[in-house]
Length: 117
Image 1 (cartoon, rainbow, N blue to C red):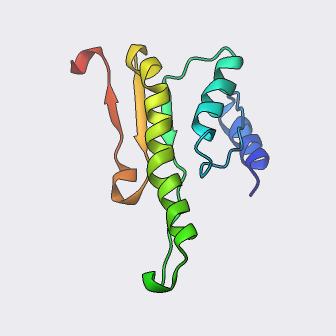
Image 2: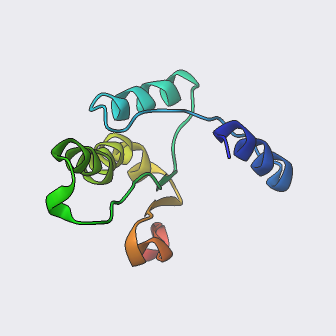
Image 3: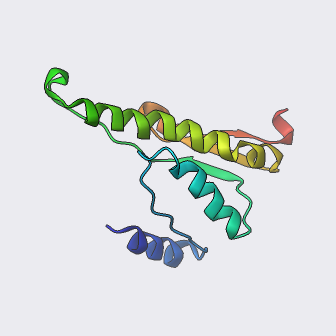
């Protein structure tokens, strides 16, 4: 399903505004560009859900180095860059939330607010 179709479903179901940013997270500058795009809209981020990633299967010895490095770029570097880039905004938000969806920890949601300090 395309991002725009999924966004339309979310708008219809939850009656919220949705803005879609399509980015190649294997590109090291993508995290910065995403942050700049959101800044240009005048938005402040109080919720960050890192749900990008991919995995591979099969014999590791047979996979290409480019594939493996691309996987690390998306699953590790992009996640760190996005979180680090938005962290100042998240830390001042009243009910900030950051969730990284990967492996079993994707089912956990960690929230920080004034009552938990």
